[in-house]
Image (tube, rainbow, N blue to C red; front, side, top):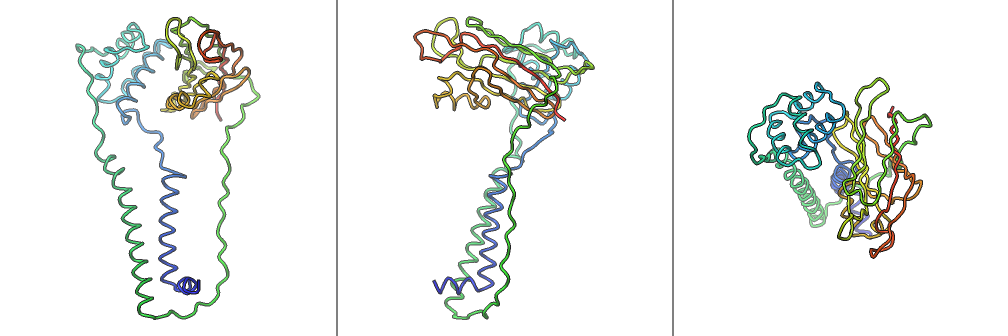
Length: 332
């Protein structure tokens, strides 16, 4: 114990210990507490799969608002890969109708070549190198600091040279970080800017409601909707056990999604973890509310009516019907 106190009183030991502690705290803060997040990136800099999602949403948006100028602007934002992405969407329409794809193609005045496999973009070498080099540099720095600390510690013990007794300094007061839990702002008491109702009934296997969000002046602000996320069991009709509620903001590159789950799916850890990849899992209950927020919009999804189906499947595992109220407020 006396040897430890003796080492603590040596400036070189205290300095090296502070260096190592500072590096560890810096790495922990930068990688865990407050990692770097990229925002406001141009569409052309997105990954190829996200560009494809953006183009599909642009096609769906044009099918609703028929704004050719806006469609051309969104298509141009995809950069050099726009034409190839449009070919990919034409080859694999997914949930988009071929008619809406053709209308969008005509609106942006693009002559599609014959269908060819979509080329995948290779990851940027710079970003890959940075993601590998940064952890290596941190580890090397820690090893060097630990080696220096060990060298000076052993050298001081072997030489027997003691540093002068340090005077007692006033105890340093460590600054306290005031952390507060981030909570979602309460929805304004003002009436919503727009409001929609989405209703599902067992047997509607193609259920996928989407709505355009326009300002009182008629300006397109984004879109929202509800669709089937997961079914359970086999046979027709589909036994839906989870829905996706989503919000798209034209001023935000990320579409926010939450997954409304049946009681059975929510309590099943395997199902809940699998669906968590699509969005935040939420238990669907009568009168429950889920809030989705983007850069300029806030969507409140309220369960107006809910009833589970009966059958051979587990209790409360699929929906007989579900009615949702979608209320959109602007964020100030």
